[in-house]
Image (tube, rainbow, N blue to C red; front, side, top):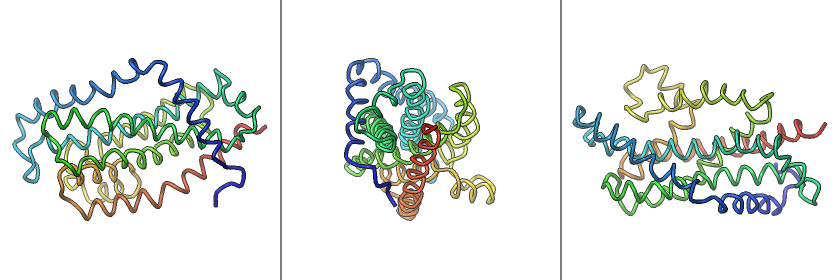
Amino acid sequence: MMPENLSRLAWAVWRRNLDVYLKSWRVNLLTPAFEPVLYLLALGFGVGSYISEIDGVPYVRFIAPALVAISVMNASFFECTYGSYVRMYYQKTFDAIVATPVSIEEVIAGEILWGATRSLISASLMLPVLVLFGVVALPSSLFLIPFAFAAGLLFASIAMCFTSIIPNIESINYPAFLFITPMFLFSGTFFPLDLLPAPLQALALAALPLAHVVNVCRALTLMAGWELLALGLAWIAVVTPPLFLLALRLMRRRLVV
């Protein structure tokens, strides 16, 4: 159940973060715009020159949707860990907002919505680059943009759970290295998931959100793998709401002393 004191004021917190973002939009847009170019050149066309095809798909087209998934994950996760921690602890932004009629739950919900928006922005910037290189299919790939927001909600909620329990900003390195890095490597990003031993495949599909995000992105860009698309959407739809509510509860426990 949603907390009773959660209202539309969460979008006011989202709008505050958007206004700050737009003040330095040129710097903020550089990384998501150029990152896919570097990956495509180094891995897609570089490493891909030694790999003919994977399941009948050119390697550069195989990794292109995974690059979108990785960008979606990184954008929301690090926005709601490093970004939210700075606003909470160093800038005291949370304290200032809570002094208004906005509740703690609305502040955290606004932060999570903003993290999801960062994922949407990243996907929106990457998609034209991938279209320019001719490695994604249209028009189905356009669904990546709304999906990026949904996947961003998932990763932002996870990130906020970590933010609620870390003792200091340096401790964010632990979930980054122990959770994000394994997902980066073992979620079917750069090689098919079915190449892993069966127990690792089961673990990836059960516990690694990026595996499902990659599968959905790959299905939308390659117009194939519809069963994995359905599984991924269902998994995300089931897991995101309880993680969102857990993030609200844990952050309230941390902030209310």
